[in-house]
Image (cartoon, rainbow, N blue to C red; front, side, top):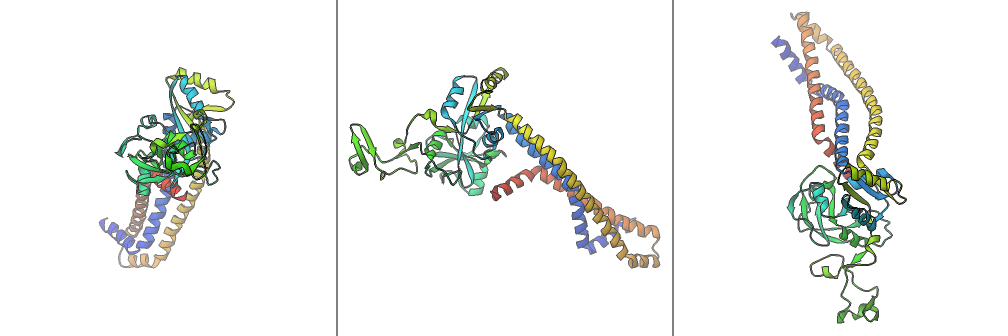
Length: 394
């Protein structure tokens, strides 16, 4: 029996390219349905986990899916903005914790999230290096941002509007990186997080400029009436917030009208959750959504599509399996003279059949093992690989 396995092994090693093709084909036959199922399952678990962690989300009336995807994963188009006054109104109800989100800017393809310090504790984020936000114009970056850009604490990063056709006249803001968040395998890894007021500076709602009360600033004054000073267009507006000019930064107008794109709401209990949802159920301008419910509906659609994909994958597996069987059959026909010669030199028919069977078994076992290894790798690294492709594509 040992001789049968030895000859089978030697034959496969001699025809190594044919063997590798057969093993790879069988490995893919095993991997395609199982790997696809694993990726869909892991992806749905990741989506569901973040949605379940976020009880409610407040936004302007519009697409609930757009609101949730943008507020949770920072991937969708920016939803219509609500006012900071809407955030203050739900906060004054004292029914739970509320966290504002501003998602209208990006830098190097990564979303800039304007929020409050409570966001870090809510998402259970921990620093890998540096410190948390302390002053206007500072930023904390996610692990993936730091890895892909090579940025670290002390470096600077410049903001840009999410769309090239920003009509608000927002100026780029140069921000100092003061912290790097440890890897979380969540969308926070790809985020640049700043203070909410820093986002409003990017919007052009707040700015800093040359002190017009000084004697050397007379060239920038258009009109002066008592304490009221009107500057001309030549006044120098700062595009970076530094310890030297931070006191000159100020905001104009009513901050209740300043924009947000979502508000995370964490009710105290189920009773307060029901009360909040009831109050906003028929609101004319705002919507209060349950992210878990919205993502659940999205996954129902994904799973219904998955059935068709799995059927297509199953048909492809059958085709690949039939091709592998054909290759085995043709291979045996090409070896007909070799097998006849073995019988003529004294090999029993059972020996020849056993050798061919051993070859087939070795190829099948190797292919199945390869498929299982690929499935295990996709379970551990598949989502990270897909996310890197998506990010590089964007």
